[in-house]
Image 1: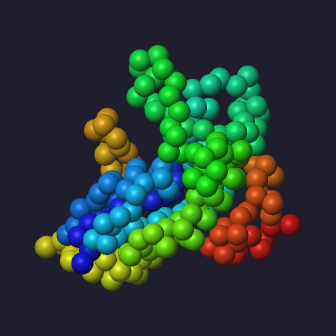
Image 2 (image 1 turned 90 degrees about the vertical axis):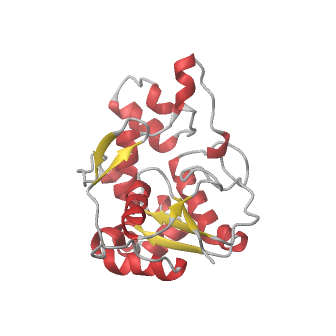
Image 3 (image 1 turned 180 degrees about the vertical axis):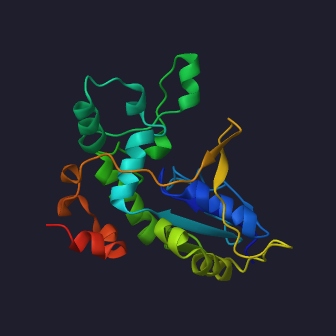
Length: 234
């Protein structure tokens, strides 16, 4: 019997939106006993049969632009490249690694080892390797480690909320929250420890397509999940 759920997904993939939806609609609780939602693949999944693992992905163009704007937890976010062009080059094509941001207050740069490649234990060579590797783990490895898991696209939450939430509900056999008119959508959430409402909204992409919209950057699962985007590439 499923008692709770957890979420796995890269930064800027809709994990906060998904968590807020789960909180509003279903009589269940989230757990982070199997790793933080963005940094996964290293935990022990024993005794996890009562947890539904929800994996979420966002299409490459929108995701990479959103992540470029925020650079959550990336060491790159605290560097000062001499130009926007250099910043973009580092973000797309150079070694990528994350840090414990809270340690910066102590004057320390401490790498997050749980954001390394879970197969090689090395830093990711670039952002495209990071994406391919995490999608591969979610699709191929996680289902062999846990009893209950489901994979959704962020876009399906935005365009067909009812169907996607019903899909999750049926997988976890979750009860609806009492006295709600299902589905309950959300427009904002409380971000981190700041206690400040962050609005869920779409923002215009700023990285020109020519820098990353190439077939060589689309991994196997990007091709399967977003065939229209992939097939439109030259």
